[in-house]
Image (cartoon, rainbow over all chains, first blue to last red):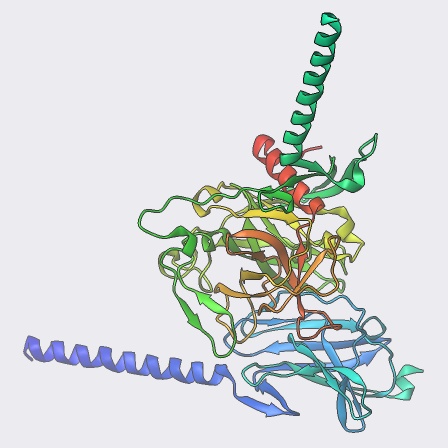
Length: 173
Length: 346
């Protein structure tokens, strides 16, 4: 076999390896990017979510899971909404001190969180709750009753980490 | 008669000289009108100093007599001069060869040449701490240089009030541009600088008042001699409709992480008076930019960015800690004392 032919074969093998590597990396990148979707009017990512959320003794426990290949930011004090007549209403106590935590969660990592509800909410009552663990813009709007109220406004280009929990009368008694 | 005339003339001269001297003094230094009395009261601030190498915390007090300066534009306040390194060919005041790329409708722009002042003097840092439930957490923020080896940030970036734990600094990168180190450390133009001490007001540990949310990081190297540092100032009058800029390291998913972004906007007046400790503004900022400098077109810092919670006025939700006379004095004193002694002061 002449040298030129050997060189050509080696080149082909290298090219094939590069192609395979690129393909594998491409698939890995595609899969770990996660799928963006909108649920409950909030843009979310299929690989970025809240798991194992439950209420116990005045606290809500939850795990933020980051299965994407990016480091993400989240807030130690989440925004919490309660469903009233089919509408999500912000129920955080407005006197609670909020500042940027700058908390980070690395790729393929998860972190356990706990919040004390009576510290964060204006009142702890039974109902269906939605918890947003990422930074959210709070805006003002006029409610159906004509009163001014604060609400979470979600931007389309962002991704939010969302979890749900329910408080029953038994839990609170 | 002649003697009496000479005596009166002398008196007039002495009186005239005294008046001139007092007028000349008034031109440069004006005492806080509220403090003019036979006894000028002293103010004091207790500072906690955490030695990150030993983990030991020491406490000391900065005592000062409030004094203000009358500036040529008629405003009253305090000013500390910054410094930037000479770089041939570049317009330093414009950040040299800095170029920007706009992100959608977001007003934040990405800074790509972070090696040039003033961007070189803005630093990204990462921290680690154990929270109230014993979980190990990682967080971070933005800092800005105020001296050869001193940087300023927000106290909440380096102290977790819920657990009462100090945060340890796991990385401090002036002018960082990108996650990790990059090829040949290209993401860290000034390297990763060790932080030896953190200093913040003791009151921050128990008091949620915004005015205590500031801290100074003491660096192991005089990297400021390469990055330059910012001027900072306290002005007694609250700014009205002035444009300021905030530059830092946001950490939301709309930006590239560990990259520097900058945005400008109007600082709102609200009902704030000269004693206000907060600047509310409309400048686009996100989590991770806590501690970032809020500066004017002359690169003089007036505020330290803090967060986005202003339920009374959601149109202007972002806010910064105002550099008050107290904070200004503490920054100056820490600067002076650290540069002279390089150790804990009393």
